[in-house]
Length: 174
Image 1: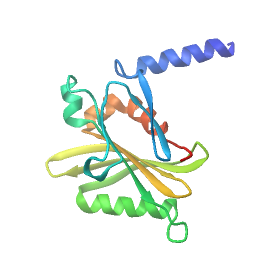
Image 2 (image 1 turned 60 degrees about the horizontal axis):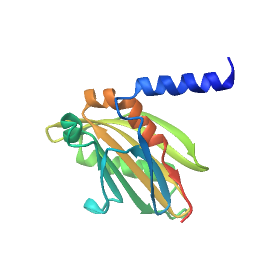
Image 3 (image 1 turned 90 degrees about the vertical axis):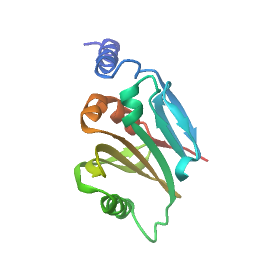
């Protein structure tokens, strides 16, 4: 199969697998990071101490009530911690605030030349049952943490889009 045809077929399959409108992604840039996000998602910066908080549009009432992206940055001191140690600390902190907390999967990655871990989590916060991707990207100066959460059935519906967003996280020069 010619390469061009294979590429077109892969793009068509990805567009079919993603929810309607999810293929209209825009690239966002912040200090030290870039990320692809659906163009129609609302964005707030600096909310609750986060670098970025994003949600689907209010017209998607189920998504607005459930889907949430949060991106934070924390200073990185290689003398004090490593990616694995940071991830363990993050999981301990999250697990302390949640019930029935479990790591469903963990995958080490390299994103834009930086090491990262993508974890899939399942837990309860109060009455809410949540499923999430947690992406931790280690740069020379900081850890960039991205979480994408929703309730389990909605997460499954959005899985391809959430994975595409999480895997688009990249370090950038400041």
